[in-house]
Length: 334
Image (tube, rainbow, N blue to C red):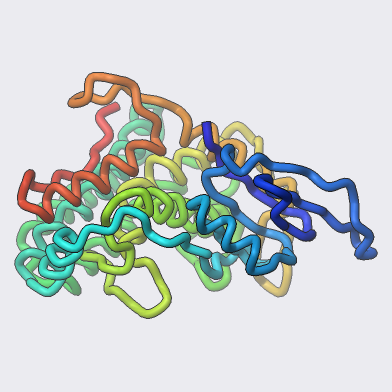
């Protein structure tokens, strides 16, 4: 089974026959013992350290359909090497563009995206309400905002509702967390540990959505809720909205409330709170465990992983675009 590889050490990545060869280097630039990664075992690569590579490697990765995601020193996602698409479908791309250009058709997709995201936020809040947390005010306010979604007549209006829902949700998060608190959303830079975790997790969620889109016939640059823009795959942002509460937030709640991550797993550099390398590894281990966790799918009647749920969401969008079935977002029922 293919898996995601995370590279933290600086070094050189190269092709060795039909295998990936990673040669790490120490602080003095001295090469250490190389590691070999069979390419057939790799689904994608996440690079957090500086890496030397050449065009032969990227040709090899492209032919092997392996995407590579890059992050800078401050954990910002900086871009992806996106392997050549292999499932292109002209008809679907025409329909995807047609739906984006029509306000009516675009809203028919954007509204369910917001409803799905809001529903999954509510599931988190109600889960902890049943465990004695005071999340009732946030739940009540979010439910009021959800009732306004169908009345929205423009994307800007819809995004305003989404922003209000998130603000209420963030207040609820502080009721869920035991020690460290969020105290409002801060992004650039994250001003505390919880905001740092949310930024880090959201970027990882965005990239896994991008990876799953890659294995469908969807064009990742044409989106419906977020505005398509230069140099970004905005459809991944759309789909990530639904899964951030289920994947990112639940991992964060678990790690912080079980004290698997503590304040000393972060460092403060020029007002920017970021995870130390040890903290990143703890988060990514929990993240991988979460992605591979399975649930019994109601309509399919079999167990599927959270990772596969993302791809199923892409297929649902495809079916909507070609007129086969109206899009309904994934909503957690547990």
